Image: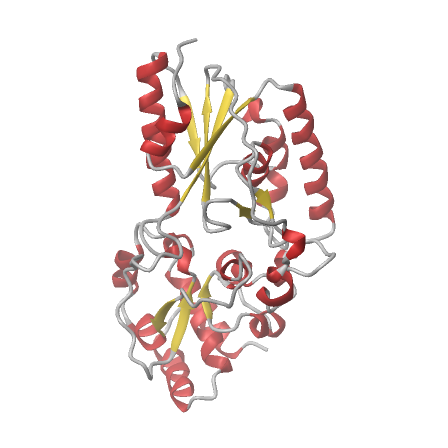
Length: 341
């Protein structure tokens, strides 16, 4: 096989780090089966909430060669879209200091990470074809049935922290993961992450990061209590218990990531004017969020979450805005969220 530098190719394409695993390796296949069993126990305990796709996709995550027919190797990368960086930008209009506001997670700044990851993986594929000749490859960035964090940790790109995120030597947890399933055999590349300290020396995400108990020492991660789940994945009406957990979040939550490594919370959230969000046309907002991670949630879910924030507010303007919603909105979901118990 022709010699080439996969690390140099990946980094030149925009990756932070890269590894490669042989999908025919019996040890990897056994590790995937064990990961599947652990995930099944987690799902059986109810921690997956109503995300039924997790159960539906479980076997496909274990049997990667069945999911990606012909794949011989998988290249795993970490990358970023300026998550946590000062110069990261977002499309939302400026918010006045006294505005009623909600917040969007800082990771949703810049271009949607799914698109960024696909662009990087596609460039890696094209460069490898110059070295190896034509071959097929399928990119996956949180869009296909893959144990992405498990594969990244198994390959040595980082370790899984108590917050259930991949913690890396380069950028702690502020990275995304992408995989490229290739139908040619590529030399394995495994790393050994050189972490400055193990997670059990810190555990800030458990002790100070999570306000809801979704991450708690000695317990499995509980999606049902996670603000990101409630604001992004949870369908339908939010009950009182769920509303009480959500703080002022419209999309996602940053608290378990901004304290890693141990430090005070940094506010990298995106502020959004709730009056603007609820009164602007849905078409205008869709155009604004197109191409960003927020597009996944959609306008109606953002507005549902905005109503939750308003209901908890003691500001008289919040009551007035809720009344405007009652009189002007036609969505059964949104009208139901205004007055549900």
